[in-house]
Picture 1 (spheres, helix red, strand yellow):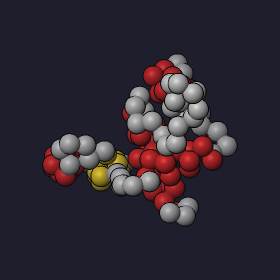
Picture 2 (picture 1 turned 135 degrees about the vertical axis):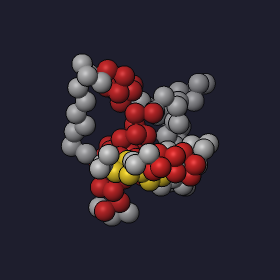
Picture 3 (picture 1 turned 30 degrees about the vertical axis):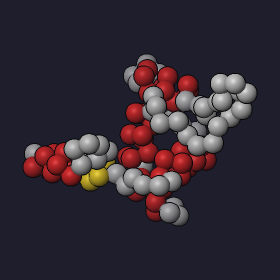
Picture 4 (picture 1 turned 180 degrees about the horizontal axis):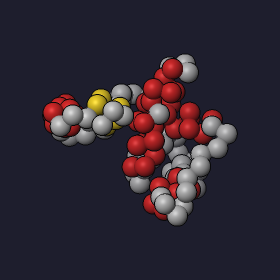
Length: 106
C-alpha cells in the first residue's frame, strides 16, 4: 500500500478517494480538465514505444491497438479531438504517468 494511486474522480468525486485513503491506500484524484485528455494522449504518442504484453494484458493491448481518431460518417474525414470511448486502459495509463509528464513540462 506504499504505491501512490491516481484515480478518476468519477461521479463519486472525493468520496471515492477518501474511502480508499481510509483503508490505508495512498491515493489522489487524477487532474482532469480542459485539454488534459489531448495533452496526455499527445504525450503518449510522443513516446518511442509503448510495450504491452498481449498475453498478460489482452484487453489493454487490444484497446491501445484499436484506438483511433473518429471519422465523419459521410465524408470519412478525420474529426478533431480524441474519442472518449473504449479508452479505460489508456486513461489509467495517463493517470498513472501524470507525475512523469507533468514534471517534463506541463
